[in-house]
Image (cartoon, rainbow, N blue to C red; front, side, top):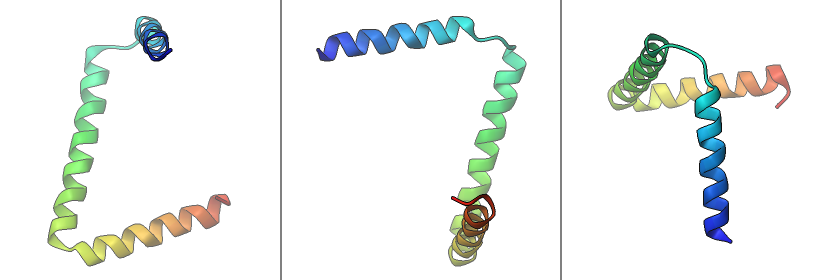
Length: 69
């Protein structure tokens, strides 16, 4: 049962990978941007943890109320 689910997931992953369109430049830019954003968040979290936590809470609360989540 478990092996069948794993095989199905692998087949689906390979199908999605083969259907993807794009270039290596786009992938590198997207991955690099994600790394930079995470690095900035971690640096800010280590420098001013309370401020970042308050800003994060305020931003997520605003998103939740604005979009009705």
